[in-house]
Image 1 (cartoon, one colour):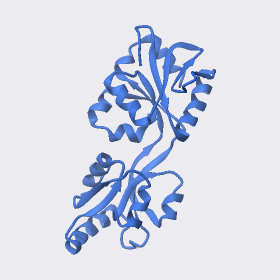
Image 2 (cartoon, rainbow, N blue to C red; image 1 turned 30 degrees about the vertical axis):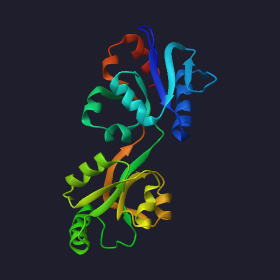
Image 3 (cartoon, helix red, strand yellow; image 1 turned 90 degrees about the vertical axis):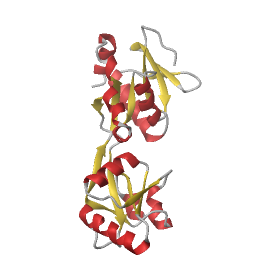
Image 4 (tube, rainbow, N blue to C red; image 1 turned 180 degrees about the horizontal axis):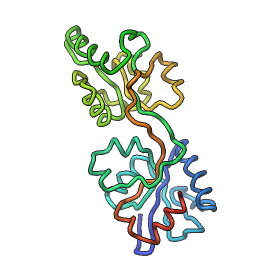
Amino acid sequence: MIKNNLNYSFALPSKGRMRSESEIFFNKATSTKLHKDYRDYFFKIKKFNFINGIYLHSKEIIERIFDGSLDAGISGLDLLREFPRIYQNKIKVFKVLDFGEANLCVAIPNDWIDVQTTADLEEISYLFKDKNNFRIRVATKYPNLTRKFLYSKGITQFKIIPSLGATETYPYTGSSEFIVDLVSTGKTLKANNLRVISDGLILKSSACVLVAKKKLSDYKFLKFLNSLK
């Protein structure tokens, strides 16, 4: 995005429910409607005409705030926490929003009746390796958060299987033994015969207004951000 010294950039998620819910929140918070151009990639806010709006993938919003090509935007807390710590050193969670809520959890097959806690999962991971001569597999889109959480619980005998989508199906297809994924209603887990273990909550996530920390000292931009509170 081309910027000048008088303008600031703000991004909204480009797809799905996060886009529609972000637009609803944004219109209400700024007491105005977004004015989109014919390509539907960019928008302006009549009340804050110094803001250049753009639609980006939720993950890209975080990447571009970090590299300085974007000043702020709405994305998921789960995505921010998945990035390396250096990203979080440069990006502030300015406001936690009341949509996009989901829990990142460890979920296992229902028929693992002897596994109720992470301690049980640690035990079964050793038994699994002894029996099968390879480590128990966990499918997830969140390898960093998953690895950190499992290690914190003393679980070391596992292999992460990167998930490209429909993570809940991985145990059913034999691609992994258990999963770590976002859970909102729990219906998808239930449909795939999975359940969350009792102490398997990794992160409570929601949509957030994320801001480059270096921009928080700019009075004009801060005034706009405070309108979103």
